[in-house]
Length: 251
Ligand code: BTN
Image (cartoon, rainbow, N blue to C red; front, side, top):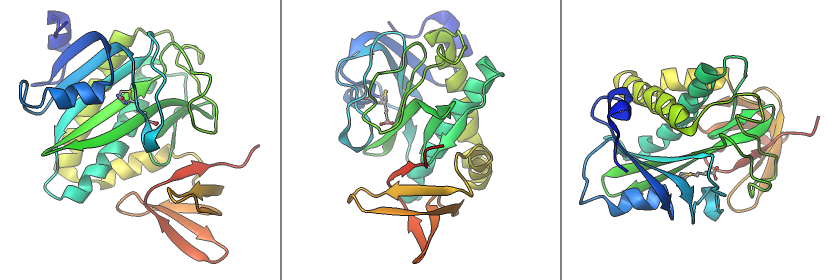
């Protein structure tokens, strides 16, 4: 199904939405359409993913009732800046949650998970495709998978008392995303980082960071630097962590 009229009106200017009943992965489908439907702003969503993928090679459980959407954006001029889009997206997701459920308090877990009540609501997977960035988001609208592959629990908007339809949440999110991408392009990363930090989970507290190599470091989460890297004060000094998973002490 491609963009119905009511969605087209509500979509950000120039963006196109294709909603499929089922696909392997919306990121993969966007990649397949690189030549047939070129350009920025193509969004692919599906009711079900049969091979949804998460960060670090994990699978992303994708039953019907949750949101799976991927957006194609142009790579920024400085290629390294593309990773900043995962922070842009996390802030957009949390803004969308606040719009549909103002009673909730979304927090952001480095680098880009949205948490509600300390549990994972959504995940973001950024991939590159030639000159494009594919920004894939999964949001637990109706269901929280039993196991996210992560070592902490998951929740859903419904479980937190927010009864919103997938179609509505998708449009609200895409609108916030487009607005924040514009802000990021106009004003740089600083305002995005400031918004991210204002909702950060664990900033100033003790955390453990596990690197892709499996090495773990514990210390105080003192700040993010200007690139979004996590600054950890350990007993052995300050470490700058560019990629990894973060764990909070049990309370
Ligand atoms: C994570 O591991 O936290 C990231 C999960 C990203 C899942 C989304 S769902 C839409 C898009 N398509 C995929 O196959 N993955 C992303």
